[in-house]
Image (cartoon, rainbow over all chains, first blue to last red; front, top):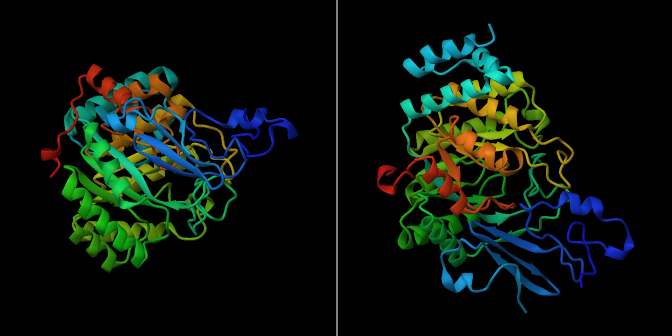
Length: 81
Length: 332
């Protein structure tokens, strides 16, 4: 279960994050790690994005339209080790 | 009469191919809502007459993200603002893969972008390598957007095979100081002149909805017309958290459509491209209306720091509208 807000990186238990959720749009990749609250290093690519938390490791997403079957097999918003 | 400007535009722009001037463009920007469908229809006819039915498809990728020393108030990549964007660079193999995926969508343009004031030696070397590797692996035109250039850098990019260079004026000259303080509109203009002089295609547009007045929006259209760029990317402000423009309102859909019509009527022969912010401002319906209202190019997929519609959605829409995607051979 997530401990940190993906919109501001602060502890979910520490306050009201409705405004953060309101600012987070479908067009936004993740910017904060929900496990540790650190700011992610995010690379937005033409057909997906990949992100990395210095502590928790990589995240990745590929769109369902990605024509590369090998990449598509990783699925959406898959968290790596 | 409220609709008189459309009669003038029909004769001047559609029949003779002469774009609207600043005063005339302002009249279109102020047109009543009930006449907006007519304005869009006319803009579409102008596009079909002077550009044809084809749509140019492009993908973009960020080679260097964040950490920019400039203070463009709309940009989450400025190192001067406390935004969620962290600085990073893309490796060349990933960039080539991004070009391949872009080409797989049918796109003929791939633009490599870096968040910098202007390129340093290290970035120029990376770009040269990237262009070489993309050309070796993928059939696609390569464009670049690397900020302010010196003459030597413009020459080097041309010699490296960059066929188009993007450098947006962003907004009207009179509004630019409200948007950027670390460099001038005139510096941007000088880079655009260099790009043309070196024989690369000029790509220059801006962002609508940065607090400019309608008069300044018309001024911007006229300044772009004076520049005569090969392509005008039209962005709509997506107010990003942490930037000075984070609290600006999103442009109303009708205003965005008026702007598309006005810019097409001011720039009858240019490639007018849907770029960032359209998902937010126009949604699905507005995207369709824009493509039927003067737009003849799209950025497919994601942008530099935000996500776009899936390419299949946009390509499906183009098919439905019977707008063929421009082929690579015709752009060379």
